[in-house]
Image (cartoon, rainbow, N blue to C red; front, top):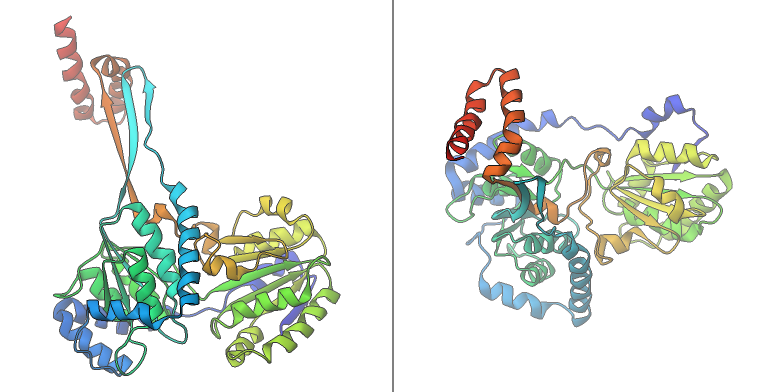
Length: 432
């Protein structure tokens, strides 16, 4: 099922760990054309592309209050309770991320501080496709609300020929305080949020996953000054196992990732060949019971198991891979986890499946993929704020620091900079 590589040489790791490439440049002309059309023709272009791509003739882009109210009634009490539990845990984890403002006196009379300010207008994109990702609404809407964003809009494509949105998406959005929901998907939704239309307001930053077209659209609008959350690619998991791992657990973890889509990435790093064989056997049993087994099977065909006995070498390989999700089913996992430097989110021990982080443990599931975990963090409250620095000097403070500033300005040949200090120092001296 999974291709096995036994003790590969370190020089071969880069090729072995390479994600399947996709040349996004082939999409860019088409994506740019749609963006330009929406920018020029607004709502008319949005309706046109919804009919073309989603086969839906919308009467209204904005979701009505009646539909929002009815969504709650369409869900079972057990699902609503589960969503509420997830909301509470996500809030508990994200609330402490708000940083308290501290005034620092860097030298006598020189005060500096920094204030976090919520980005006023943010947009959340929730893709359509084969699964209603209402969990992502929680993961993006909750930190946005905590950060103090004033306007949080959400775009998601219609899920059927009636132009409807899954009630769980609507319920979650209402629960976390999303301002408005728009029935709009794809490149056209990204363009609408980036530049605004008569119906959809322009935002300052766009969040959320999407297919290759949506990703390309986010990258293109970023070039014109609209911020985005992070680069994105197909979802991925790396599971690190030794003899302490439970094969049925590991197989379930691998399949929970593989069922996302045929392009999902699954990497198994194992200490020996026997544990890989046991996991492969469990995969064969469990995949047969999955409704999405065809998707999972295709993903597993493109996945790899790498056998490395030495724990330090295995850790080096994993840090080089920089996985979005890392599950550590090894002895002393909690201690070894401290040495992980490149990963989006880490799941420690046999009883910490990726699924809990995807839904309800409290951590955010919007994470860097495609190796970007070596430089990017997952979404947090910080993602929804900008930080403004302040400084305030007394006369004494300017006297204390002025000479150094004038010396540095003179060395850079920026005499006016130095003079801005000098005129003040002269004024202070005249009062003495």
